[in-house]
Image (cartoon, rainbow, N blue to C red; front, top):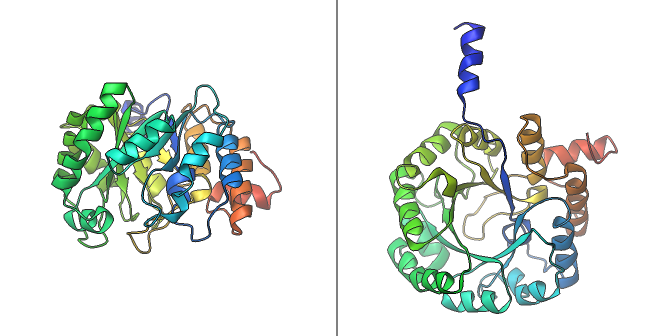
Length: 316
C-alpha cells in the first residue's frame, strides 16, 4: 500500500472536531477507596475540577452507604460545593428514592445503570437486566416530568468478570432500551478493562444500529493498558463523549482486579495531539490530579502526570 493511499484513508476517518469529557473521578474514582475521604477534601477536589474547563462531572451517588460507604456524604457534597457556571454536576442513582435525593440536592442531571451480562447485574444490584431496567422506568418518567437530563450506563460491555466474553448484541439491546426510556446519553463501559480496539469498535458499531451517534459515550477502564487505544478506535467512528477519571482513579467494588478509569490527563494529552478540542487546561488538570493523589498517598496512575512530575513541570 502506498503512502498516498494511507494518507487518504486517514483523512476519511471521522474524528470529531470537539470532544466532551465527563469527569468521573469524584464518584467512580473515589467509590472504591477504603479510607473515607473527608467532606472538605471532596468539596475542594470538585471545585478545583470545575476550574480546569471540564463541563460535566459526577459529583457523587445516592446509593446505600451500607454498600458504598464512600458516597455516604454525597448530600453534603452537593450542599457545600460552589457550582461553576457552565459545569453540570451529576449524581448516580439506583432507584426512585435515589432520584428524590438527587432532586432535593439540586443535581443538574442523574445517571442510571444496567449491565450487559446477567451475572454482573445480579452481583452489582441483585437483580436481572430486565428487572434493573424496569426498576428505572419510574425514575425516567420522574426525571422527564421535572426536566432533569437522564444519562445511562452499561457495565461490562467488553468483558465480564463472571461470564468472560460479552456479545455486542447484549450491549446494543440494553442501550436501545435505555434510549427508549429517555436517556439523552448512554455510556458504554469496559468495567474490567479487558477490551481491545477492534472489540471496542464492534461494540459501538452494533450499538449504532439502535442508538444515534450523538447519544453514545464511552467509559473505559485501563486494567490491561488498552483504554487509549480503545478510545482511538471509537473516535474513528465519530464518538465524541469520553468518560475519564483524573489521575486514573477508580475501580469497581464488584469487579475484582479492575483498575481505575483511563486517566483524564492522558486522554486530554492524546486529544490535544490530534488537534481535537476539549476546552480543558492540561496544566490546571495536572495540578488537581496531584492534589488528590497526594491526599490519597499514592502516585497518580496517569502516564502524563508521571512525566510531568519527573520533569518538575505541570505542562508540556
